[in-house]
Image 1 (cartoon, helix red, strand yellow):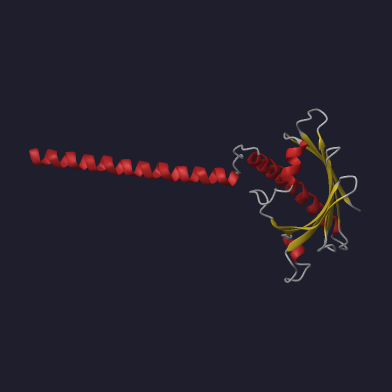
Image 2 (cartoon, rainbow, N blue to C red):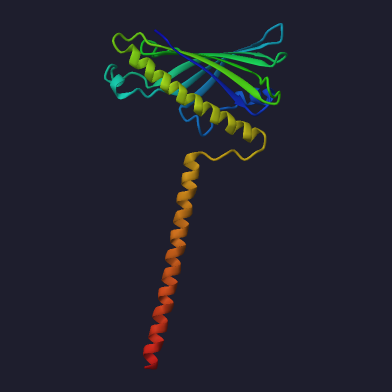
Length: 218
């Protein structure tokens, strides 16, 4: 049995902008699980379509129960092949991705189609399909459930990363990540606490000086 995912997302940027951002997505604050990316093949077909193949390396942290099934020396990185077909005339880009190691544990295959949004030609629509399968006897269902949940989580990160890169390319200030916001809030709290401490010290010193002066008058 295979777990199936079907989803649709919209980026509020033109197809040309999304196409340009696609090749510049990494690194971004939401893609820390992506370690490397390399183009291994690229060609332009006679009908002016761009064909590319990329090899990506991503971290692949297993759930604890799955780690017990595999020896400690099993690689914790997953290698992913990504084939893409870009049709600039029809403004479509289709990508196919799948993992080439850890296939016994789980295989995740994804197909995405990027096209002009039908309601707003200044936006880009992403139609996403995925298939999650496992050949592990006895636990394949649990592995597939885990794989589907992780895939959905990664889709959210992918979209946030896309929006971040698009904002940078368009000269806008990218929205801050939760980590950055929390860090800024922590620094501001420190500054506020330090200022309050200094003010308290100053008031204490002034009070002590005034008390000394009063004692001298007595």
